[in-house]
Length: 169
Length: 169
DNA sequence: GTTCCGCTGGTCAATCTGTACAGCAGCAGG
DNA sequence: CCTGCTGCTGTACAGATTGACCAGCGGAAC
Image 1 (spheres, rainbow over the protein chains, first blue to last red):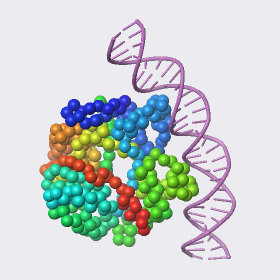
Image 2: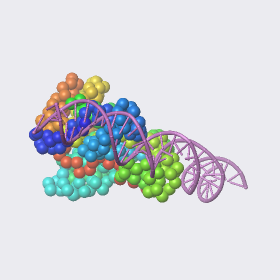
Image 3: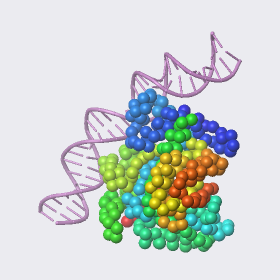
Image 4: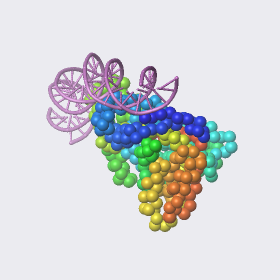
């Protein structure tokens, strides 16, 4: 059963999930098209149980949606890159706003370490990547950018192993 | 209409999507729970059209699934970090296999540039991150690792702006 | 002109959903 | 021991949705 807890160290709200929650999430991840009824059959529990678990998982924020997963490569953007940006003092907010307007910026984080920001880019080709980088970097406030082009993706974004680990407890 | 094309430069299969496809994906991303019937009402087209479009988008790989989106923070892993790894020559495959077994590694890419690999990690706390990094790096073949902790995430992983751009054409 | 293809608007049976209910079991508190 | 609470089960119901069809229509290509 998913239960809201308060982390003893940080006071953040976390949610403890049990084995059934874990199996449910894993099942949904593997076969997203099945409905509540079919899921209850697979898991060997009553339909109402699955419904209640799902409602709770969404209410607690563990599951934040079932949006379609779109493959940028299939859309014509097969090149992925990560850019580390160095930002001029005090320009952070402007840069964030700028990057948010660039469709090819799929993700942006502010980080500790050598750079100040890390963003994930896609482009139509290696040549097109230059255009994207110019668009990203062509903004006052960005001092320097270093880009790493993704060649292979041995582990695509995943969550199931973590869910299973979290469900162990 | 989503149509398979062959990219003139690379020979890769890409898919051109039209405005209706774009609206459909955007709609599904915004309100994932609506069904085909409701979507057809919102888009002002026949139900069969939406069904056909969806089938085609999935067949062409543009939409690769509707899996649940799980928030690691809600599961008790509020700390995200990116680690750049330098790999000893010829150890790539072993390192990939090792990292794939670590649940806290959500994503792994091999890249050009200073490092050889870039991976996304989560941890229960900053202190716990040390444990995760030790687990990741404690493997022969990894020469050096540099980690950037994520402080803020101004642009969460998104795809809609790109879909809208792709749908313009 | 003819053919192909996609969109429309309609139907059909089968299934699923949301909701509700009573019964039962485990657990904590008194 | 009894009580109250919570969660799971099995069931029921009306209403909505799904997948599958079909004939007709229009635009684009040959």
